[in-house]
Image (cartoon, rainbow, N blue to C red; front, side, top):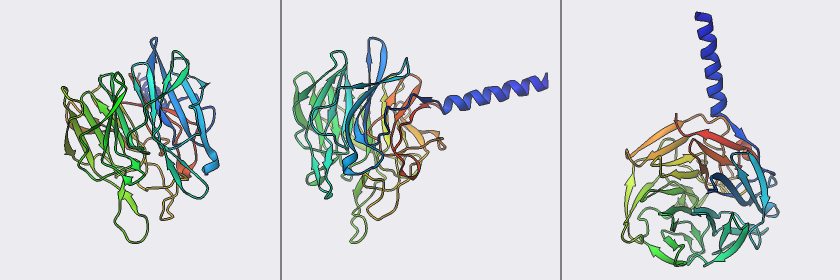
Length: 348
């Protein structure tokens, strides 16, 4: 009986490990710096990946591809691409049954960057794209989230004048942009953020280093919470949060669950790097294995795991389902561009 009990326990542990390391069907092609979101259509969850960068990691590898994963059937489908050229550093947010893809930039072989103000809207039911009003301030590497199934917040990012503290608010009903209360922390880009209930959470990113030599950017360790005024969504009361688990990081994957009352974060790198995965100081970036959340109900950080089996970085969003965090592509160890799609547990 004791042997049987040990065997059952071993099998249970093995199944638990397998569940923790579950992988879904990989992307049709390896991609990083892609914009990721999910939408529920007719009772089924679809995960979307837009644009990004291919394995050669140069300006010629920028993709305009778009893919949809039906989680129930674990199957990717290639969908119609956004009009125009591919780009990096865009954000994707779902409101109702529409997906908003905003901002980003197009680098060229000389190293110059064209930051775009484009707002493209995808209708999964109609399988079509249309143009929305441009961002008032064109940004790349911003954080973004949805509020009350109506509004989109675009927080910070890198503009033509450098990092910005602006919080841009889009009303999907009036189809108008407005400026909300700017955040008071260091102006950052490549940070990770989302909206949970009536609360904005954002963390980390890159800020001006102030150094006269070496990289002009360093990782920010600031974490902020913004309480949205329910009567006026342009008004936000900002307050600083304590440090999250693990070191400050750049381009962490972020997502939210209003039902859980949590903002989720995974991966990212302690090194601020260019789109090839190499820092401006010449140091190669490597992904962090830490996965954690901020519990808005309890006002505390919670570590889910500090040893994710296949950590990645270079993200713009994740999909959060009822029981998992879905990480799509990104850069893994040694800056390898991944086609892997991981389903991570939401709890320890």
